Image (cartoon, rainbow, N blue to C red; front, side, top):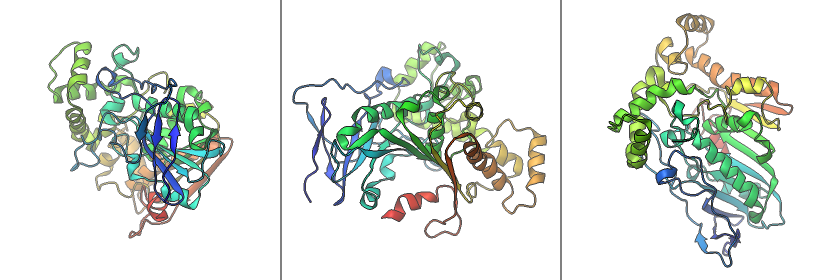
Length: 415
């Protein structure tokens, strides 16, 4: 197998490797400066791209460290990974050249904004079967490192809000500027994601009230859901508990943020997990680390923005699996629904229970309708060009079509 070509971006060169006979990969290519030290909790700083004579050559043949992870389950504490994570993995056809102008797919991974990494979802088999496309998979900050919030962050003096989403935007800007060197067409970019990745797609479509459309021309949202976007004031209790978990005794917000920037990233991630897991059964979304209403990137609730026409009206493909919420834990109706919607009134829960009492899956079906299927219907109604689907193929070794079942078809099923 011949050696992979070295890609010269003007400010740096990258040497990838042949992953298969038809696919070359460039792994861990930075799109922003490392968000370390004072840059923690700040919007990404674009990678230094000033052209130089004979730029250095970097090895891009191995997967990089993924973003610091939050808990993926009650029994799996977070903390693994690196803060130096603002990178992309690229999968390109063997014959790609700057003149190829292949369409580009930018993939945003799922994981509830708490965990996940592009390494888990490789695309070289896509290139093997459909070689005329360039694929870019994005690493972005997660959990409290990506979505710490406080009302006083709104002015940007002490920290920034929704930095994980700004990471995605910076990656899209990098793609726009540099993807032609890898054989991609910067005018033919489609964003794609599953679960929280699909939620990210929705938030990029509605970003700044729909003023983000120059970065992509289409979108695919697999299992998009009603993202639990809260007001900043509603998240203050989580911030306070995080300070307690890391034993911060400072009183001013400036001192508290200095403390949060100096402690170890692993300690911070695990403290954020403890806050979330403590409240997970009944008020999880309020104490989880996810996007918030910031009045700028997210100026209003996504559904309201979609219904008001404040979104990038590009062609979209959107859908869900048949049994999206089948994997929910067994619980009484009030506990199960409060775990997703903390502010539901008792009368609302009784109404839902009555409406779904004849359904075999009960509250699980109610949750699937409220979280996933309603999101699909909104997309189908508001976008000028929308294709809706229902994925009904069980994953290998199962009989149900649960949440993420389509990932088997997307990835493992192509091997």
